[in-house]
Image: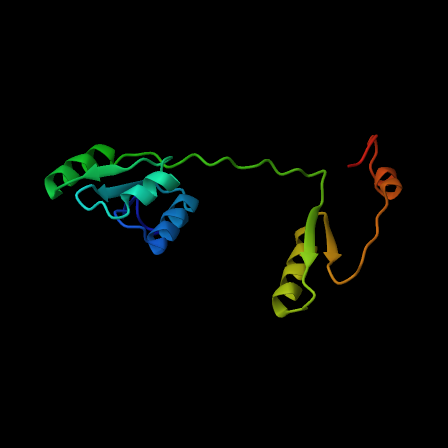
Length: 146
């Protein structure tokens, strides 16, 4: 999938593997063209009710000639524009550590320390009691805490 220009996904029937691959393709920033055979209507009602791919739109077809014609019209489709959040450098990255200390956790902590990012860790196995007074004294300009 990484070396393709676009993805044509047959969503005629509800297939969770295909839905996963569509999501993966969206994450890669690829244009997705879902196709749906309207002559086979078993899962059409489910898709219509769920609205899973309404933001991409479907290419509905009944035969191969119609499918080829419609795909050629949409082959230059643009990928979904995903909003990239702005990194807030004034707030720390919060990491909730697992109660099980694994190699993955050691590597993650090591990478965070080397990254230079400001981060805070919380251990779920330790009860931390924070009062409203503590919170408001830590935050400048905060008048109330919910």
